[in-house]
Length: 141
Image (cartoon, rainbow, N blue to C red; front, side, top):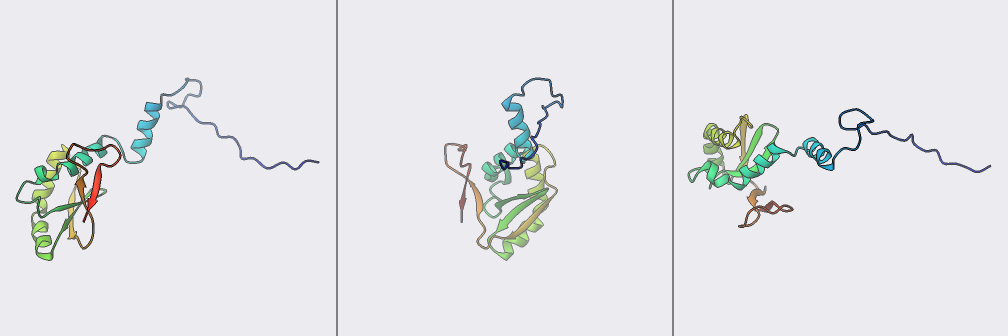
């Protein structure tokens, strides 16, 4: 008697609208759903534009001192090179939040967290000719 391997039950995938007989779904629709699930989409694009335009958004009085480190949920992460700058940026966090949310065209961030940079990498646009699709940021110490 031949030995057979147990097989997992075959999965049935539902179409986009939940109807199994609706026909094929376009790859673009599926990709949009996947990117949205992974955190992509229009909000992600706008966030990338924020990092790319950081100096313009914060202006010459704040941009040289506030280093963009990223974001976590509704918190903007900003780095400072020393403790005095960190304290000053914390005092200016309302202004930073106002400028950044104005650029984002919505109240995207609710708070700013300023920390000492201490070896963390700041985000900088990767190149002078605009963003590269595969390497939008280069990390710079």
